Length: 316
Picture 1: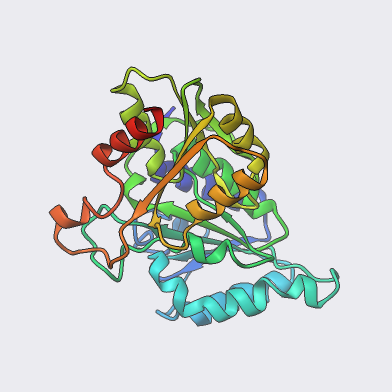
Picture 2 (picture 1 turned 90 degrees about the horizontal axis):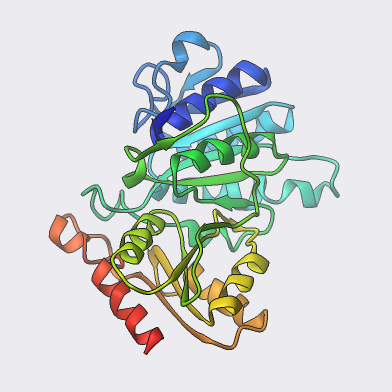
């Protein structure tokens, strides 16, 4: 059945609540309102005791989720905008991510944080940031960014079943994009990259919404371009990415996050460490806050023109 990214997540959440009694949802406006972007719409009607509206306090609700996970629950926490993970960073980094280590493996925190991420919706500087880079630097946290509806549902299911804290960054510009998504419950494995399309001339490693941009560019060029989607950013499936890079001999890494100190730089470095010695380049967002002006915002992340120019340079 054709479903949007938003509908696939809603479907997955409903099935999770139906099959895992220890799972529950909490967050700001996840109940009657249906979540900041409608992902939890209607769930409170069928699960009134397991879809919980909370105060506007990301630190508090992340602490509640962490504590309940330690007591055997599997909380699914919605942070309306990933920008406000900053408010909960102590609970995530110093508590949830560390407890398994500090307890010498005797305790775990099976907690999922869903966070709407990125630009493209005109939400301005405080509601349009991409912080996936930050959390890939934290041992003990799994970080994923599904680029389509099928992966969004499957990654969510895998994350809820995982015994570690998982942060899923959901590019908010993709919520209305649609594709075929199975009705049944299924898993997309964490830590495994995907080949989006095969090619021999150049590899594009695209993250999140950049996958669709890469596909559009590839379809308008005569080059034979391979597109790889990491899906999970930590742990990173560098073996699959390096295999593609070595096959084509040229790599372009695309990320919506700020290019400076970004995940694209980490992928770049790991490819070199894995023995890649071909041409390589990367594109990310400009080092400035996201503008409220749509015309400016659209030019702050890699555009099709930017990508085409980078490809021409790599293939010259």
